Image (cartoon, rainbow over all chains, first blue to last red; front, side, top):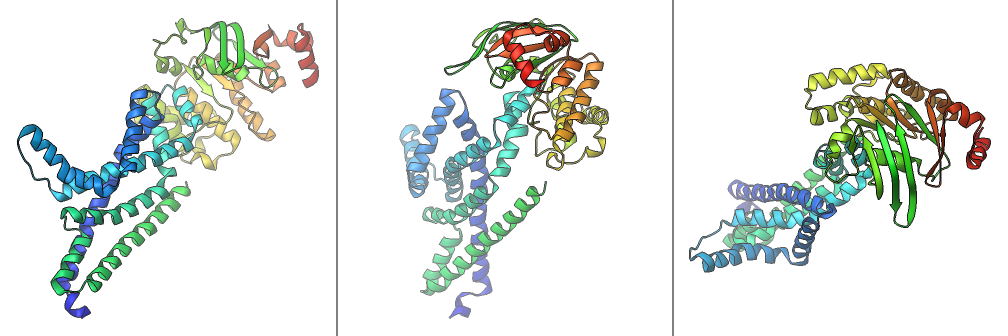
Length: 223
Length: 240
């Protein structure tokens, strides 16, 4: 039974799926960190517009299910676009999945980065400003590098969550790991083995990432 | 060089500075002493606009830094500030701590900024530490790097906020030595300190602060041997 299902071809089919999942997670993490950086700076800003926008962003994203956000971008947005312009377009499930995951992750990363910035403390901001650096230069060269170092452990957790959440994109039809294991399940009328194989691949990815992150952290701590 | 007029600062209900008037001439060294909570540090922080005054003006070389249109980054470039807790950048090496602002603010090349940094490190006796991270330095070494970092911006005024208060006794001397060096070069300096002997030796004038006011300002001789204000007399008798 195992041998018929887990052939080299099928294994390769699943590994490609794992790489798609990993790509989704990496892309979403990058988008999330960029959005989260702006979000965090907005949250701590004295400007009421920036503060308000960032607050609304976090509340909407954290307050609604990610699956709903995925479906809204994939099904809702094209419908709105068609109603407004009369043209229709068919979004790519991978691209929509990546953007939706990135926007979603950005809301959580905003709070992470904000806490990282607060942990750096006002002393560093004052030291930068006292040397004549502007607020944004101080943020860029002094505060944010230290804030990111503070939040490596929770950021790694976020990355692992993203790898697992990438399975939601299968709903849109993107051929990531979970969807591919279900395809195999349908083909062989056996879901147990493909799903177990997918589990193993998810575990390999998450364990390797935890290990690498642990090493990175140790190296930075030694400074 | 520094003109302070009727300076007031409040933190909520706390009235920390209650109308300070003070002029500091070019090349002058003025030491602020007084009990904790008397407003010495806040006054110093107002001179570098780390605190915004509620009332009054602080004029540095003719520029009112309390004015909302003043480009504070430009003014701060000319005024160095040394913190009680050093505030070095822990993620940067000693050299990088010193070169960052000259490269980003004064647009110096890395080579030029590094050469200046190494000159300054030699002056403060820490050239051998140029590539280490601040966590590997002692308190006195950190403070000497912090002074070098400020000097790299070629300031005309240096402000010291209790530069030796966070140091172990055996490290105080090495930091005071560096400040003494600056004094000999004619740097305009305002120093908040509890080192009375040092204030007496180095200051042209000593300012006594109490409860948000400058109650007496005079030569160190007069302040330490013949104080006039009763609060000064009380303070001096307690510490000497």
